[in-house]
Image 1 (cartoon, rainbow, N blue to C red):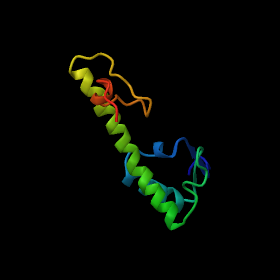
Image 2: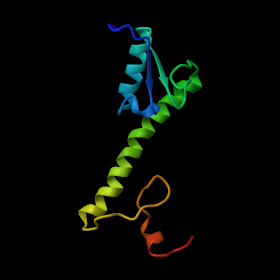
Image 3: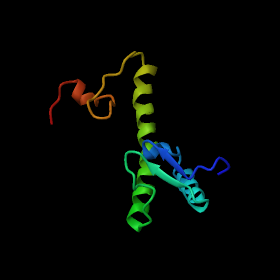
Length: 106
């Protein structure tokens, strides 16, 4: 790089890129230029060159946009239908399913 940086630290790893293909291409490009990419929460996430590490990078790169889309979809729908604050579940802060709000048990 022109400023002499040889290491880039990202936190969390899925914030390196919003799209899986951009993440993979960006990682490969930086690696080819001799730049080390390190995730603060998982230091070996981008460093390891094993088939398993590559699989984990691809899966987590695909899951990040999915979770973002789910959060947007589940929070925007109640707002469009007149509810100002959707009821939240403890997991991921997503709105609770209708059966939980109605008091149903499994």
